[in-house]
Image (cartoon, rainbow, N blue to C red; front, side, top):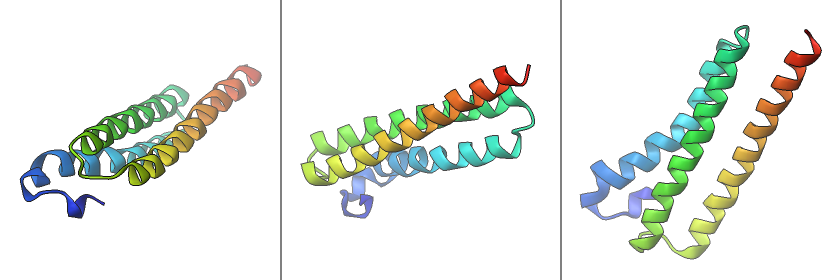
Amino acid sequence: MTRNFPKEEIYSLTSQIVRSSRSISSNILEGWAKRTYDLVFKQHLINSLGSCSETETWLNFALECQYINNETYNRFIIELDQIGKMLNKLHQNWTNNEKRNT
C-alpha cells in the first residue's frame, strides 16, 4: 500500500507505517520466546497493542493526506481492530491462567 505514496514520504510516513505494523508481530514473537516470565510476555503483548494504535495513527495521516482511499483505510482499520481484540483476549486469558495457577 505504501509503495503508492509520494516519494517525499518514503522516510517519514511510509517508514513509520512499515515499522509500526511490523512491530506488532515482532513484539508478540519476542514475548512468546520469553513466556516463562509472565510479566515479560504480557508487557510484549501491551507493546504490540501500542504498535497497533501507532499504525492506526499513521493510517489516519495517510487518509487525511489522501494517499489512501476510505476503502483501503477501512480494510486496514478492521484488521487492526481484530488484531487488537485478539491481543487483548490473549492478555486477559494469560492473566486468568496465572491467577488459576496460584
